Structures are given as C-alpha cells and as structure tokens.
Length: 451
Ligand SMILES: Cc1ncc(COP(=O)(O)O)c(C=O)c1O
Image 1 (cartoon, helix red, strand yellow):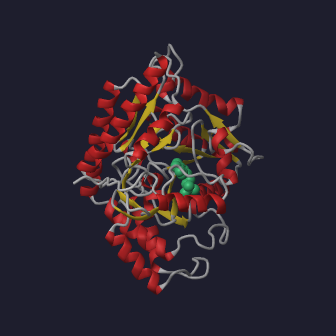
Image 2 (cartoon, rainbow, N blue to C red):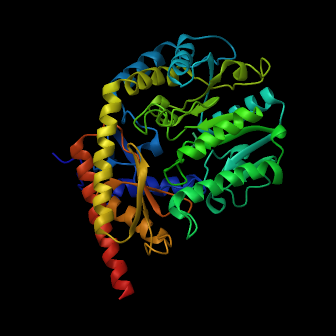
Image 3 (cartoon, rainbow, N blue to C red):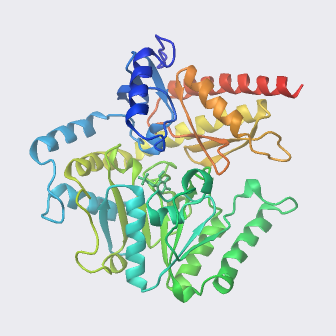
C-alpha cells in the first residue's frame, strides 16, 4: 500500500491557515521549506492538518535515522517525563546523562580513554569542541574548509561557508578562523585529474601553515567527514589522512563534525569508520536522540578534561528526556541488523539515482557515502553550470505529489536524501518514483524553454 495519500489540494486549507498564522507571528528569517502544517508522524510518513499523508525524505534534516516516533523512544520519553523533566546537570547527576556519555565513549572510534559532554545543538557542540581544543592547546586558531556548515551561532557562523544564505548581514564574525579549499572533485578545475586536484588541495593546506597561520597557533582543524549542507561530498581518503597526519605532527586537535554524517547516516555509526581514521574529537547531534534536542562532544579524555570545572555546559545541556531518547536511538542504530538495512536501503536509493542520471540530462552528479545520497542538478554536464531554479522547482513538483525533499550544496542545486534509515523498500521506490516524475516535468519544461 502506498504511503502517500493526498485528500485535499496541496497545501490544504488547514495548512494554509496555520502557515499564515506562522508568517504573522514569526520572523521570515526562520524560513520554511514547505507550506505544510504537520500534526502527526510515524516512520517515514507525516500527516498534515488536512489529513494528507506525505513521505518524508527530509527526516528533520537528517535527525531521524530511526524514523519518526519509534515506539521505544516514545515510551522512554513518556516514562522519563513523568519522573524527571529537568534538573540541570550543573546542579546534580541523573543516570540517563551518564549512560548516554558512557555509550558515546563506547561507540566513538579510538582505542584510548574517552569522555563525552552533552549539549543542546550541533552548533553549541561545535563551539564547545573549539573551547576544549583551545583550552587543551592554549592556541587560538581554527582551520575550516569551503562548503562547511558548522552552525549558526557567531563562532560557528564564522566557521560556516556559503555566505549569502547563512552569513550575510550578521557579521562581524569571530576571529582566528582560517578557511581552506575543500577537495570537491566534481567541481575540480578543468584539466586536472581527481588525484591532481586532491594533491593540490593537500598542498594548499600545507602551504597555509606558511602563508596564513603558523601551526603552533592552531588549536583545531574541523572537518565534516562527509560535507552535509555543502553537498554530501565524502572527503577523499588521502585528504582526510593528511588532515589526521598534520594534526598529529603539529599537536593540533582534529575535530570531526559528524553532526549530519554521523549516527548511522552513512551506514556505519560514524563516517570516519569508512576510512579507518580516528579523530581526536567527534561532534554529534541530529540523529543522536531521534529528534529530541541533544548533541555530544566525545574525545580523548586528556583533551576533554582540559577546561576548568565550570567552563563547559549549560542550563538544558543533556536534559533527561532528551537523554533517554538518545539511549533508545543509539541502541537501535548500533544493532548490526539496523546498519545492514540502512546500507541495503542506500544501495537501492543509489540505483534509483543512477537510473535518473542515465535518463535525465539535468542530473549532473550522483554521490554520497552509503545511504547518505544526493544528486546535483546542472544546466549542462560539460560546463557544470548549477541549476538552482530547476532544483527548487523539483522540490515543489515533488511536494505537490506528496514527497518532502530538500536541497543542499553551495549553489543550492542539489537534492539530498535523508529518509529514515529503516524506511521500507516500497517507500524508497514510491518516493523515488515521485522524484523521477518531478524531474521529467522539470526537464521537459527546461527543454521547451531552450527550444
Ligand atoms: C555538519 C553540521 N554541523 C553542525 C550543524 C549545526 O547543528 P544544529 O542545527 O543542531 O545547531 C549542522 C546542521 O545542519 C550540520 O549539518
């Protein structure tokens, strides 16, 4: 039986009314990607205020590896809410906080003692990781990369790329952030092979230690193992290895931002596990707690213990209700059968995308790591001129047909696929049939305009 079930025009009257209230009551800066008001969700299905059911391939922007409202999470949240809604981990200790930290110390790669601090969001966790690295090294500078997304607080905005959408009008930004080219091999300069381009990015990174900042001033290199917002680009292994080696050589803390690509999204618990590379610190959030606000910084115990008592934390950080959700979500994700299913789903999704690449000229690239898959739309496969308008149109065509899909990429010309990792084959096929139909509509409109 199909999941999508549309019973009114889209958006329906109730959605329209609530979205109008939202627009009147809230600032436009907090944008919305679809004009729909959701009242209920289960698995990969979300139901709106008019009774329409959509397939959700946005998954809370990668927050719902375990799907919407898994019963074990819901039960744990309900039970915890009745006992202890909040305490503040600065005030006292409660078991769920300790248990989540122990679990993270167990599952994060690295054959050394680890410690974990819990926060509320990916941005806050990245900020905390930088504080820890600075405290440990007694150094100010942080190296980040083009295409990176690390959050929207002032420090993480300084670390985030894509100026127009995220940063315009909000400066000045925190100092001592150095941004270097990232090896996006799809968009490498003409004439360079992939290997030559990766070599070039590596030598620019090395050269930065002469041209931009002395390594003895660098606290941390922060790198998304697979770029998320930047377009699902798996970091080439040689580049990642060079980052690891340079950090080791110069006593720099290597921080892997796995807020989007961690917690099972690539078919392993952490994306770095595909590489066999061990960061000093891993930052996680999003799918860690099935949608409850929680984030974690996990790393070498000696690094994590650098800041003085009282230097870290916050009022809500590691809230008990969020923690019990995390315990259940982590337990689900770490089951080999769950990850095996995620990988099988990823292969199915990838095959659909490759079929579309073979059929539709607009699809310039298909890429990702495991089930973390994306397609990039271009006006021309040779020039690779981005097609952001067509990409937006595709999300709208998909939405009208009952599929929620969202964009990504520096040029907003990619569709990223972030369904629950335990979505069924039938749901993958159903969603991808909608994408295919929408893509054909967009392509034929484009061809007609070109004719
Ligand atoms: C890689 C990465 N880091 C950090 C963040 C920020 O997380 P949050 O929105 O929870 O602050 C995101 C959010 O999309 C992300 O994808």
